[in-house]
Image (cartoon, rainbow, N blue to C red; front, side):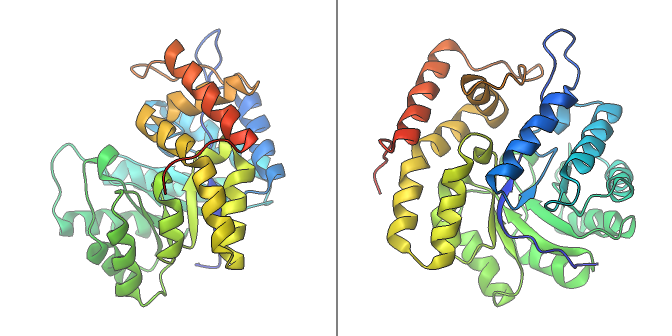
Length: 303
């Protein structure tokens, strides 16, 4: 069940929309997936926050899953993002992802009402009962409204068979150190906070889940390669070269900034879906400048 080699750069594609009718643009999604795999990313994770999964209908969500799995064609693992208010809806999507041929699912708990730890635990346990797929527990309190402690996530890994990985996106590097400490380094965890990529690898992260790979795949891969080789100087150099972009896309909102960046690079993926608005002109100019500096090696942020 847990036989999945997941590591390195996990790329989060945006979900392209057609300009003429606002529907999902599967042809452009296929093109983006090919670009990411050709660049060398280690996994594709459709329908995360960057993929605007919260704004898709059920049929659109399923279409993106099927399109992604078919196009990846086992070249790298596919991790499908699931975030639903109800456990039943999340379980249905988990079942569909498995039937479609996904390799794993990433579950972000969301709720209108604040959930206690036992409620979160039962949410994951019931989803796990609906699928044989490996599950990545995803902590992102800024988007979900639920903050899972390292202790809770490690408990889920130990007590729920399918839960075997963690993605930590709270922006608190101490959480990652705590996950590593509690598990004795045995539980794979992934960084989901772009500006913390270098520190996360230093804390023992197995990989980096990032939408930045859509814009600068070579730089994200270079960072991982430098870390794997133990070349700290090279890791620092490539990280600080891309840090201004990582900070920009996080602050500006991933769907709008990544879509704007792809358009600047010649791939028109449509606008974000309302209520999210496209990046404004000033933001596009700033983004173009940063992308140019990253490409030329001029971008720097204080270490």
